[in-house]
Image (tube, rainbow, N blue to C red; front, side, top):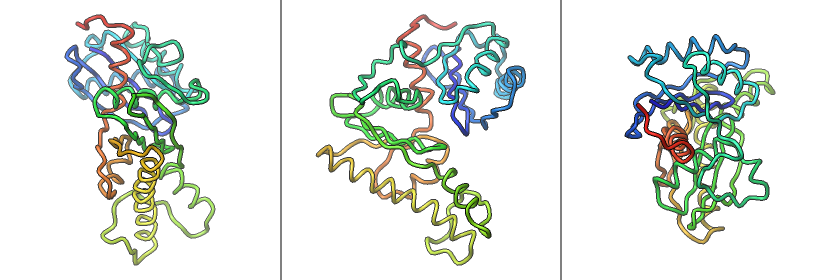
Length: 260
C-alpha cells in the first residue's frame, strides 16, 4: 500500500492507495511546525490504526511539501516507522506536466500535484483552485500546458489579518450564515468572508475564460472549498482527493512497480 502525504502550511493530508489506485484512507490534520519526527511517527501510526491498518501495510511513500521546515521531520518519521525511503516531489521527478511559466522551479509542488491529477481526470482547458492558507488558482490550456495562475490570501489568513488589525472583531468559525445580510457582528463576518470568496472565485473564473477565449473545466480542492464552492454561481467540480490522486500518478510514473 502506498502512503501519500502533502504538507501544507495549515494542514497535512494523508492518503493510502492500493494497487488498483483506490484511495482507501484519507485524513487531514493540522500542520505542527514544532513537532518532532517521533511525534509525527506516533501520529501517523495512530491514523493507520484508527482506520484498521498497520505499519506492515505500508510498503512505499511519496510526499509533496511547501513547508521546508516540516518536510525533513515527516520524512524521518516515515523512515523510522516503516523503514522505507520517501519519494519527494521536487525538480527531477517526472510529472508528465509541461510547465511554461517564467520559472517552473518556483511553482509549488502542491500546484504541480493538483494539476497532474486534474489533467489526468478532467477535460481541458482547466482552472484548478486549491483553498488553503493561500488560495491558488492554476490554469492549464487546451494543450495540457500549465500556463500560470493567481495567488490569493486564503480565507483563514484574511480573517486572521482582519482580527489582528481591529479592536473588537472576534475570531469566527467558517460556517455559512442563514442570510447574506448579517444582523450581528459574527454573522456579518461569516457572510463577508465566505460570500466574498465565493464571488471572487466566480469573478476570477470569468476573467480567466475571457483571457483564454474559451470555457474551462473548473476543479476545486482544499479544506475550505467544501464551504465556499457550493455558494459559487459557476459550475465547479469539488474534488478533495485531488492531491492524493496526483501523488499516486507521479509515483507510478517514477516507480511503476506493483505494490503488495
